[in-house]
Image (cartoon, rainbow, N blue to C red; front, side):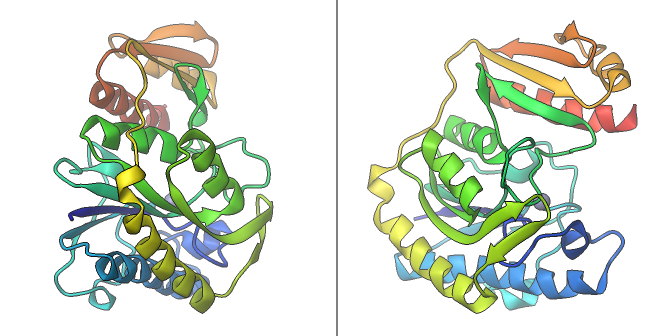
Length: 273
Ligand SMILES: [Zn+2]
């Protein structure tokens, strides 16, 4: 069994503030939460291996995408590090048998979802595909499914885990915290979270045969509300994008990787506006 593991940091136990997960202007807490993040990923790998996973590819998918403490992971695990991956949080998933999303968070606009956002919060105000509101987990799972890789397991706060299970009922989840607000959470301890994730990962693989793919029916219509008018001015210049309002654009294609790359182009170009 070949496992693809995409890891984010906002959904790690205890995390409730940007400073704790910000590698660029390090606050003393970043070093602590980076370790807890690594330990949750290591716990997921240990659980998956106990249930028979062999190859594991980890995609460090938070911020600059170089947060994991590599020497705290098993020596035979490979890790994708660094940002500017064309498929970002789900780069190079082709050929894997199943996927885990560890430390994930809610979509921008979610109530009671600590540090909720969708990719770049200064650019993306809302993402909808075929009318369905998307979190990072939704759009990432849809790309994985295009390559035949089902999402098996997710960890994070309750809103995130239950939000994904509402869209993909086969996904096993471990809730490590209850979100009180955008910057507050009621969390179990790192060690308790790691134990729960080890067990949850094992259980998720045991149930893998029940997993399904999560696909949007073509034509796939992506509608994006941007944070600012000037961002829509830029994004509307990309061939194929239709301006649907002062701050909104629409893009339609039959191919999910094309939709995904168009989405990445939107938040990268929008950030330059
Ligand atoms: Zn993140």
